[in-house]
Length: 166
Image 1 (cartoon, one colour):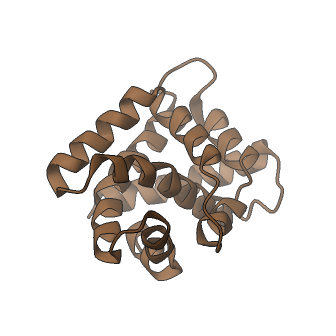
Image 2 (cartoon, helix red, strand yellow):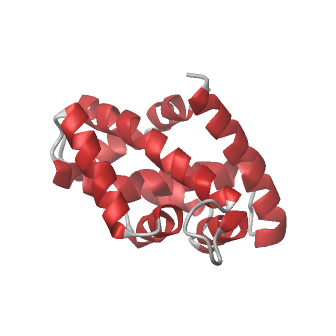
């Protein structure tokens, strides 16, 4: 199952649409256009090709597991507004700066016609959903970043490969 299909089937798209006050089809289109950038950013961050320094897979795993792991997906699917700070932290880890996130939102807005402000709100929610999905697939269950990092690396690898073969 592709990541986009997982988001659709798990209810993330509908939950995000409701939270942002947009049509589910618009949420699906926005998510479909944003996901490649998020996954590519995670891949770059995991390989250490991102912002350098304390990045790499350990930094990404730390952001995911330290941010609540699989609980992030539950937060996105919850009935209350998503607490997006964790998503913003993940975006900071994978993109390095808010300017990159803004650039991604701007490019996707130009392609899809979806309001850039809506896409900026969508980015951290999607980052949390993807990270939460990865953590659940890795079975983080409170695992430390060492063991969780290895499992997350495998999950990320399969997601990146799946996105590239679409």
